[in-house]
Image (cartoon, rainbow, N blue to C red; front, side, top):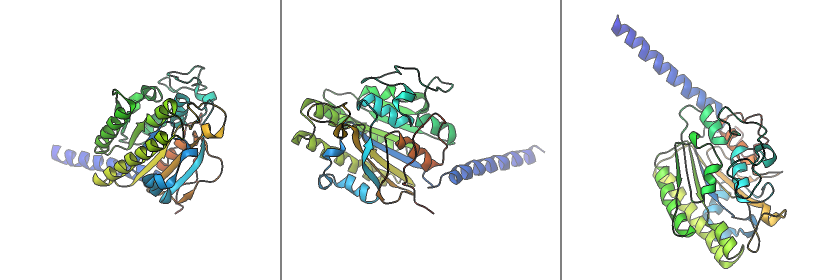
Length: 305
């Protein structure tokens, strides 16, 4: 009797696993299982020279892209990285200052954990077995999302921002070996070079080329570890001019968004696209419904079947 009962229980567990897996795969219009997000602070669209960025150019040619993703205002870092994670403008999520670590105005909605819902939390709550990892070298990033929704958050600190960028790369490559559902790798130095030397200077352009080299190493690592059904996207939070940013002008507000991989079509993204549309696009890849309080709209990047 006990033996028969054990067989029945085992059968039911297998059925439940198959049903859960099938439901997860069925809801995704692309079949994507992994997303890798590469972010570079202050990597302005107005300074992109494709021939100096071969790895980003390859992503562009094999996926969807725009150089006209607009930031919210003011075009500063904390506000816009948070916006890139929560699918709504600052009037909704409440981050309004340069170095926001919490909402300066009350968010229009908070979940049961007291947060305006970010995409890590939404994906974790809707995808069985969801795992996520994030590495960054500006501590402000750690205040942009619900860290309880991420399995590992790593803040890399060094004597210089350039050195910490290298630490981010090293840690990011290690994280990719875990084959998490979502991996976020953030580099701070373009913004640092812009503030200290200037946007568009030879030093700034050299840093953009260095970031492109990092992108190439990340793409190679994804292939090396055998991560299948993956989507990779690259974007920034804002641009700049002279030694600053934050103004209502396009060279400060426009940043690149480049996405390629499983189920992503090729071509330039047309129509209006703001940075709060980026997380809406990622949820759409997984077939996850976005929260009512979000205002982003998915970009038309998914291949039609």
